[in-house]
Image 1 (cartoon, rainbow, N blue to C red):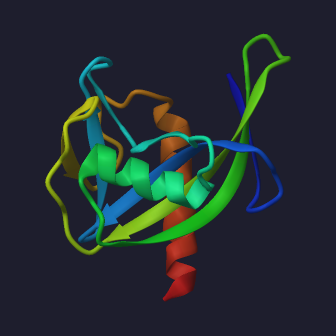
Image 2 (cartoon, rainbow, N blue to C red):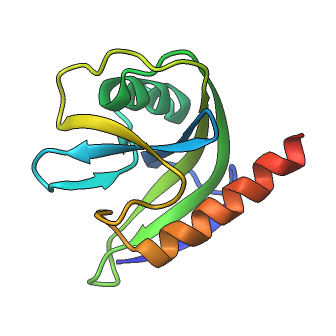
Length: 142
């Protein structure tokens, strides 16, 4: 699949959310039970739900975190391998103030990392670029 990033708010019909999460200057990653690898919290926007509501719900369901600042960063279009199908998503960063109890979900645990974990579900190279971009955005808020 190919992904194209857009400025925040440029895309409509946001169907997915991805939440990069920071806690005490570390990145929070979730261990997915079925895939047996680390990834970010995220998932589908449900009917009647805004992208922000979905981001907060997914963050809680997959990490147990509720005490955080949620900041929308950019939109993206995921183009399917067939070149025809596509989904729109929104990327967020959550600055967690505390960790919660992990609810029962497809995630087995969360762990904190300085960088991308070795056993990461998706493209490590793309992930490193995204982490660098997010660090620069957060630094602009200081």
